Every structure is written in C-alpha cells, then in structure tokens.
Image (tube, rainbow, N blue to C red; front, side):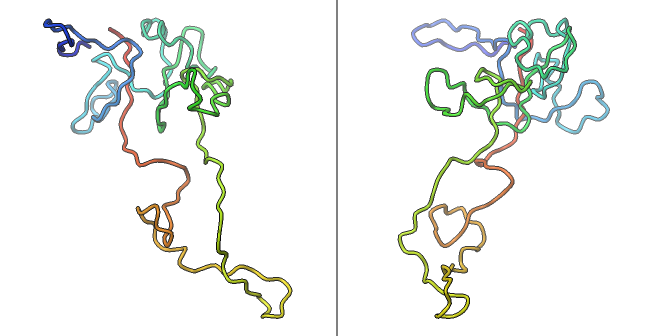
Length: 199
C-alpha cells in the first residue's frame, strides 16, 4: 500500500511513504470475510485484497504469506500449527503495549508469556490483567458499636450506608462508588487491528 506523497522537512521534493510488512494499524471500518461475500453487511471493506489481514490469530500457509513470515516467523504460534504453517497475531480484546526494552516501565515484564505459554518478554508476549497492590488508611474510623449492646464484649465498626450509591464519573467523590466489572480497564472504543502482509 502506497500512501500519498508527503513533504520531508528540509526537502522540497515529496517522498513516497509505504507501510512495511508486519506493520499494524487500527481500522475503524467494518470487516467482512471475502470467502462469503453474500453475507457482507452494509458498508464493509475487504481488507485482504489491499494487503492486510485481521489480527485474529488464524493459521495460514507460509507459502501464501511468505513476506509476513519472513518478518514475524513463528513468534505467534500456539504449537498447533503444521510444519508449513504459521499464525498471525491475535489481538482480539487486547490493548497494545510497547516492549519495555531497557526501561522499568513494565515491572512485571519477566512474567509475560508467548501464545505457546512459554515465559518471554519478547514482542508478541501476553500479560494478564491485574490490580496494582495498594492499601487504604483510615484516619477516623467509624463509631464502635456492639451487636449485643454497650456491654457486649465484641465491638464492631459502624459503616455508613451511603457507600452503595450509584456509580459515578467523579472519581474523587468519597460519597459515591465507581463502576465495577469483570475486568480492570480504561475507557475504550472498539477497532480492528490489521497487519500488513505484502508490499
């Protein structure tokens, strides 16, 4: 895929810019399978005819995608591929994160795993979701009360009932709570990730 010519700073002549094989982009259009065009919904784009594959982890033949194989090799293989096959990246449901390289920006990099479950901090390695260790400090605990009255031996801390209000976007509002779900996540929007397989 050749992009429009762009001027280079300090150079009066435009230079053609192209995407290298193995480049990954976000795609905001709808995707359809070129094998069954009758099932295409409205406003779909067949991206494979333009040199791109959806990053869905599918297994392909090395002979059919030799240029992509020369770039990523068996890095994304799960161990189920045949000798003449390799797998493309599977980015479904994932955020992308750059390799930490020589920084400490990913303190748990050594716990990452490749798709075949081997530990590795290489490109293509996966990290599960987690919450950072933290603790809360309470300067003024609630009033001690006893389930058996004032003379009871075991006192408990009274908890306010207003901690169960509806979720709010005001994250520093101590009177409310925040949204909870089955995962830890930032606000996000769905796109497709595509990988370039040819020049």
